[in-house]
Image (cartoon, rainbow, N blue to C red; front, side):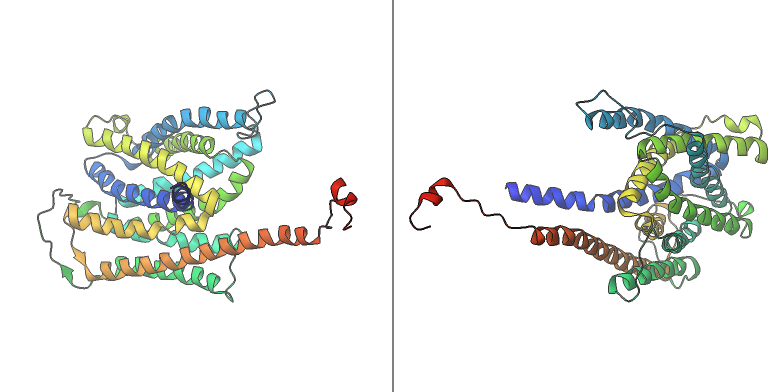
Length: 381
């Protein structure tokens, strides 16, 4: 029983980043539809981004203060409590770096992201987001955050899986095929007026947000090395991102003050869900998983979001399901499996290479024979 419990605990620890990223994609897929419903009722996307990250910062703040504070105290019990080991002192250079980190991850990217949703559809936007893994993979290889050896099966699997997932996402966006008839009446109906659709402005905004997001994922590894406090980093990013979004909304977009007043239930529920779940919980899980597995691992789960959006849209919203979506979904799963297999093999090789120096050191250690007093007095000696 003890062995089984220990084995289950090790398995859960090993699969924790995978579970976190699946939960992130489920929450993000659900967020597509509630935000679109709120936007259709008149809520401005940039006002939503500002309020959402204020709520997210408030939600993460107590955890960042108490949890990371306790870790720093527990790490040095014989000494007086110091909080600099986990949460480094904020310097001007560190502040500028976090400001850019927040701009790429929140202030600039999220505003373009939701603005494009106002001009396109959830299915199209979730499909274009799948360019993020490919862009992040290329940037990670360039900056040596990810190893790629195409002569090895694991390296070939990572590269092939990345591009197969991208092909599956593009199949969902570009190829329809025959439609599959819905088997029942959907419980939710979302309607979007054709007046709001703009198939020039929408795709430009969505592609620009994907490029910015890829740079943010790549930058995350470097920022976490200099500021190894993921909860505090998430708090800073939420509050700075909210301030950047508010400034952008007030200065560039110039909406009327009445746009900041939200009274309807769907608006308030969308802001609370987006803030607590997406900007707080999802943000923490993304940062933690990126620290453990790297930026490519995190972004490779983006195609799963496309598949979930298609499924939710078919079963709950009543959008048509096309054969291209099914083919693309299967392709996405195959590509994701290939990349995760390659990442797992990389980790095995890394663990093996770390053990080899210690084994060779033990073999080279001089052998010492201990002879007791009784052995010395024995006539056999």
